Image 1 (cartoon, rainbow, N blue to C red):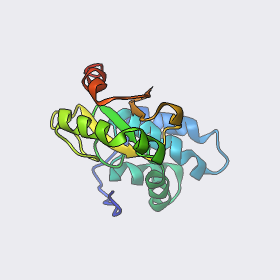
Image 2 (image 1 turned 45 degrees about the vertical axis):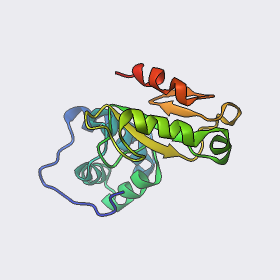
Image 3 (image 1 turned 90 degrees about the vertical axis):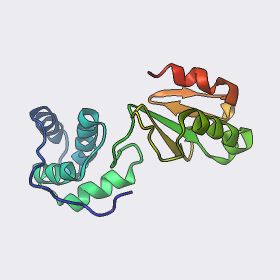
Length: 165
């Protein structure tokens, strides 16, 4: 994870991002409270949140960039590095681990040729571990984008991946 912010004068929020953030700002008394929404807006537009966006959000909200960065690095759903078109989140909680997490992860890694925290060369998938998906009764579990899958078996991995071109 990048812990050093690099400010660049060349970065600018798009008009769409700026107007959406300004709209969200009016819903909060404290501008810091709008920072998570601002980060989500930028990520929706760009797929991730570059360093320059952290500074631009801080400037727009009137708060230090370090406050925005603190929010961005606290929430695992905010990506501070480029990610693939599809995000695979594999649960590595104790329940999923006991339920066969390792064999599912191995199969995904084998099929995609990447490790945890990596993105495929074609930019299609990023594979990330998560602590818990709240689907313990169907372990092992994973998510692809916003879709949750339970009772995942290595033999079914290829079929799951095919559903995300």
